[in-house]
Length: 534
Image (cartoon, rainbow, N blue to C red):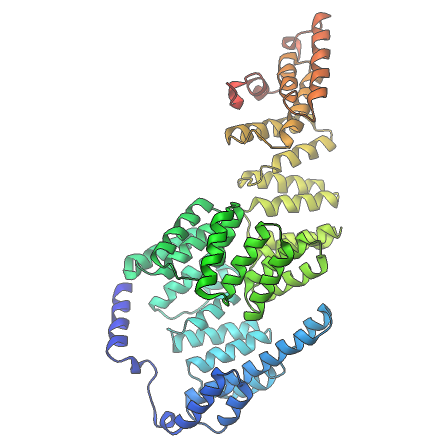
């Protein structure tokens, strides 16, 4: 069915593209005024364009008239924002034309005189005025009237906050709906559903679509499958070497992997293609950030925002750079702008939480970490951050839940169990703490991350002391020997080994006379091979 819809559209577009936007007598009458105004519009002289469109009756001319007035208001708002003194004043700058536009468009809407583009503009105005429910209804109507206008679908996507909200939308039954659903699933972090939708579109005839390939790469990026995402982006670059869209996401992956030569090549390549694109500025910013030149990086992210003030990635990345430069107030402002652009950007919420954590304002950072966790419920980093927050607020039960949940969903940074163990230590729950340290050591060695993990020595030190108190000399001795391999615990390990040797020489009770502690203890600390030692 989807293939048939696509085929019908291709035949229609190929044989009579004019059917998509029919020409009327009003269009012909307004043609001269429309052509002149369009020239001024292209030169960004919006007030001048609107002036020459006054009195035009055609739908096309009316849309350009209203859109020119809207963009004129946006331009004046941006100019005033640049001239304003501080962040508080910047937040108060508004587009003064919005209320007038809403009144006029509302009258036309009630009279059913708006076409698909007019409905799209009306929805944008309502969204700018924070009338979200009304905006959603209008964007849905715009999608019904003009299903091929992707802009209306994207605006609708920005207003949907969860899957339940999506179920109640009455969307047109068209192949564009499949693209929309795939996109919104990616945005809502429903990656499995998104990948299924993209696969069905590939099967329906879009197998060579570079847009779909790039969206699949973005989906893998969102679930932190970095190797798969990098592989797809590299393949995409071979198919479409002059592509700039989504290359900022590709640069984020190269940044995470610290691939300096590849990131440098990408930055130079995009500069040769078009140095004044938003994505190019973001890639160069990432390159300078990887080289720890944070001032230069922030400068390029600012350039990106001058080109497009609503570019989400640049706001978030600029917030990260300000954090690196210890400029917390500027970082907060950048993250807030990112949230204004897209409330589903978990990185901005998480960044705000980190900023307020630095400012030692735990109640604030708890709120922002909660919002980030709602958007990424299975991201262990959000859960660990929440646990640390609860710990600072002395809500230890909640902290323990967060740490255990972080471990259960797959702890990315391998820190949840250590933090949980330390919490048990504080509460004098020694057996639970020991179990957490044991699980932590098992995870570290099974992943092959034996080196450079700071908390491994802490875990061995605690377990050595724990077994020593339990008079399990073999296990205590094994853990103490492991302590000797680390600089920070070497002396303590040697001292403990001397004590064990002294007690054994004195004929102290052997470990077999002590009550049974846990079935895991002996198998973990008694065998070097378990940890990967030869």
